[in-house]
Amino acid sequence: MEPIIKNTIAFVRQQLSGAEGGHDWFHIERVWKNTLLILEHENANRLICELAALLHDIADSKFHGGDEELGPAIAGKFLEAQQVDTRIINEVKLIIKNMSYKASLGQVHYHSKEMEVVQDADRLDAIGAIGIARAFNYGGFKNRALHDPTIKPEQNMSKEAYKNTQAPTINHFYEKLLLLKDKMNTDSAKAIAQQRHNFMESFLEQFYAEWEGSR
Ligand code: ADP
Ligand code: NI
Image (cartoon, rainbow, N blue to C red):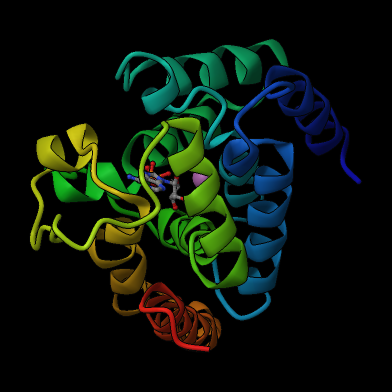
């Protein structure tokens, strides 16, 4: 493994010790692995993709009072200290700033093949069995209800509404998770997403059946 990747892993592990279970080092490791998988079929700069995957949640704004500049700033500082090429650092910072689901609901002024790859890798980890586990862990972390049939999911949420929602975790499936399959950028991610999507559909069917007291 290249020294820069090794050093980045060590930095991220240390920064994320104590992070919420859905945004910890293991999330980063899965996103990094997804990135490498997608790169087997896509033409993109490997170093930029790997660094962006490893650093993308280094200081997620939802855990830092909404500060959307902190993550890119910390990543940039680290990479400068590692003497990474300035052009690469700038690309990585732009990806981190613009790849999130929240950012995609607002105005995104940046686009690149590398961002497409890492965004897909992150989104794959938001769906399927892992996606379900992460959503309920985050809901628990925020003390949200599992489900409340009287609170209906919101369609077409704005960035602000998405950031400020207090809704039950089941609503998050309709407000984000079930929409991701059709938002994948690369063909490789689309294929993996379809299968994970089907699993979430079955989960919801079973969830509602049990909610109604069926056996
Ligand atoms: P991004 O990391 O692309 O900005 P989000 O911050 O919206 O995406 O969400 C990352 C993950 O955090 C989601 O996939 C989900 O697991 C969890 N999460 C975020 N918001 C919620 C929510 N309102 N309810 C449940 N889980 C959430
Ligand atoms: Ni992430």
